Image (tube, rainbow, N blue to C red):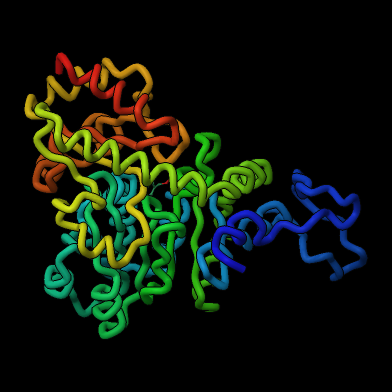
Length: 380
Ligand SMILES: *Cc1c(COP(=O)(O)O)cnc(C)c1O
């Protein structure tokens, strides 16, 4: 089966009982046993549910993974990976990770005796230099949120394999349409399904995919033990969105290239971060490792914070909202919204300036998106 066909059809089979093309939502907490010790593969929805299983199998097929495990949020998925570790373990993590990830590491997991070092994973030497005798996990986000930094997964895999590290990749921004980290040797890949995979701003969810039975068993155990599971209805909605993923990503990518080019040439814009621009430091690796550049752009205005605020307060079509990866174009101010809890000093050291604007380019007509930005930039 070709990739696009998998996106549409991978796990969907007509319902055996009725022939319904869309499988029913199994909105149930529990299941009747046939007799003591004999069930039909399901005993309690925290452990397993048919609507969730369908989504897990579908996502795994698209990812080219043997296994999929779904969670109630991207953060619950990240947390579940970290639950593999023990007190005293050390993690090397991309420095420009999603703000919620570093918030969790620095404010919660640190109290459980897990140590974190943040480095620019775009530079493999920094990763090597951060290695310690107790390093257990290499956590890479590519492209990063919000600066769209690109990490060379081949280089990371070499470091991970020669140092016996678990190698996890948050590929939320790329989606399996443009990047499949397991093909580059990652032990597991993580997605916030809230974003492109569901794609319609309707659900919060996350997933983990792996080819390693041992990792899968651990993830399943953590999933059922801790219980951060998505509802059957959320799984149904995710499946609904998922089946047009390839079409949406093509359009997100095409629109973002046009918007990035428009921004780069705009006299009020000082810097554009988009891995699909030849001038972007991540361009060469992205071109080799990804089959598209996705729909996320970050940029900075010459007028700094006041100009950025003016722009965000004057857009009409673009929605001023957190989140990304949905059909609608959304504009975000990372410093006060998604990354507000990253300490100011650290934010600035990372290049996450107060004037930075993040754009999740939607699948509307690109001329409308550009027109909206043009009018909002006029007085900015
Ligand atoms: C949104 C996001 C997360 C967290 O996912 P939630 O579904 O919001 O919990 C993790 N990583 C990246 C890159 C994200 O964009």
